[in-house]
Image (cartoon, rainbow, N blue to C red; front, side, top):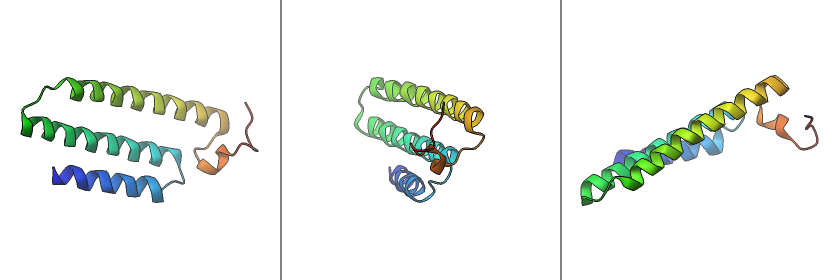
Length: 94
C-alpha cells in the first residue's frame, strides 16, 4: 500500500510540474490511474472484498488511455505539436 501512495504522490507532482507537453500529462494521468488501481487491489486483498469495483475501474482506465491517445493523435495532425500553450482559445482553429 505504501508503494501505491508513493506512486500517487509522484504522479500528482509530475502532472502539476511537467505540464508543457500533453503527452507527459497523459502519461502522468495514466500513472495516477495505475497507482490507484494498485491501491484498490491491495485494499481488496487485505480486506477480502469483491473484485468488481477493481475490474470496472480497470476498464475505465483502458478506455481513458485509448481516448486520450486518440485525441492526442488528432491534435498532432491538426496543429503539428503537443504543447499545452497551443491550446489557448485565442489560437484555436479547426
